[in-house]
Length: 326
Image (cartoon, rainbow, N blue to C red; front, side, top):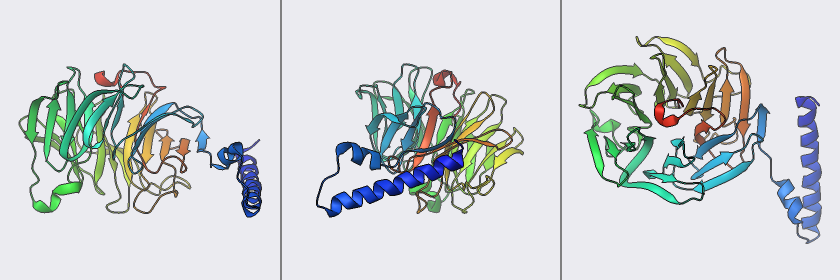
């Protein structure tokens, strides 16, 4: 069966189910449990699906999804948009005002809370957790006990850049520096432990996430500040060597690019945040080849509101050692 025929069959089935539900409810009856389950829209997936974990910023949940698009695990939390599946299977993610690690039984393993907004977290090789504090304007490394082992204050140059939009994602690099997305200033900066800026990448539209690739290039996902969301890659000199703009993919609009993962085969999996009035208008996850061919999309509007970060579980590698780039 071709995709077009399958789509028409699915649409016809949806109309039949809708008429059945209307008839039952009009007669004052209740829907059988199975009918109610079948009435729930199924995830829309094209291409070959992945086993993955993701965050839902607006829905306040973290999910693990199988290759068929079915949720197999979920955890209710705050506004989360950064996520790591650790080698032991535990999940580390931000919670809006903190960072939390839980095991698959949903027991807390590590927790850090802050009065300020937090959008970035990362487990380090020494066991500490790197956290980027947005509204408190600082980068910290926290020991498993909760003690702060390192603190770097990075105040905004002007009050207009402070607050909720100041910082989004951030990463500690292998060289000891920090890669920080200054969303309100529309720039990504590499900062050394003393606070010196050693590199700067303009990111029009507001950078949400950035990561350093093994070849020294940097990949950046930008938001909708200029209504032209995109994902782009620059070399060490700052030259753009690859990008996908908001209207470049056939029949798929990039709304607000939040997360991504660069795969060993060169493909890029991107999360397309559909907040700000864009819900339901585009898939939340898109995988493209280096030549920008779409090979996988995922959209589950019935379960997830705004997918904001992703890590594939069928891609081998230790995220703590830098094997997972996202």
